Image (cartoon, rainbow, N blue to C red; front, side, top):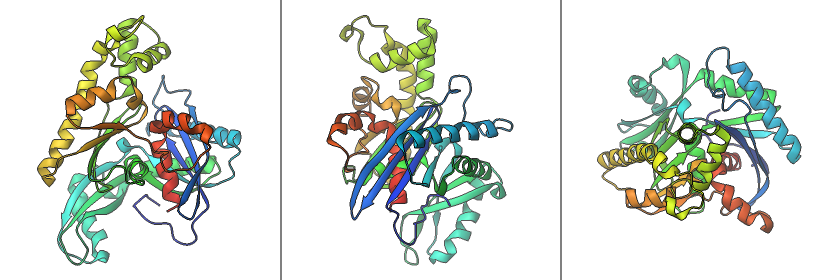
Length: 362
């Protein structure tokens, strides 16, 4: 059920839906496959009505049922408007709703790994193992021949049941659940543009996830709560404007120097402390990887809505002292020529949804 990471057996489906259930919106992508060619059939997104008043993706008692209903209704709206017929779907699980750890196992056969993972991961999971589903992937080594390094993901049963309920209400066939970081990694690595040791920073509305990939494999992943919504709130409070206007100002001005803008609100100085915090968490993740693996990140890919903020890419490149590029997950997927510029602009928002759809077509 979970996205290991497990492969879809049998005949490859011709079409598949990827649904990224984000903190502020739902994004959906339908991709079809013919041989080795992928085609974008449909895409769409819709904002969540209650985003500014409460986080819809909280799994607290008494809020889950309302959340399921709201999410499902929004999925159905996109499906109806885009006239999507495909029912097979893969959903994303928020990185902050999962627990990641890496463990090392001695030489063992493949059928011994599940029990060993359960035993070794127990001290690192902050919940009872009865309350979670464990999934894992070998990120280094070869079974029966060498020591193994394993990336383990623990997902609470409540979260899994929540998304099963969403699928049922949306009348979709849920084939996989997958943590966002794996979906995003798949969407930015499939074309071979991002080989080697790559830093991946996804900056969404309510959380930022910093990961390190080596040869397309997620090696480490760390999430924290400094993200787009917090930046917008700072602008709103400091300039005494409402949230919607503050969001527009952030998207228009971002980190651009004031002397480059006309009628500037002066957001750069307001945002730098929070962006600095994101930067420090990123540097810490990269340092930890270097300590563990002895390898340096050579390139950084940024994704998520905040990645498009003016001046951010340039600021990070200077501070991290590495090339920084904005994710282009639609690269290599066929689409109408009239959509080229549109897809380039919205690509960073759709990385997770694209990766989910691609998983279903593997």
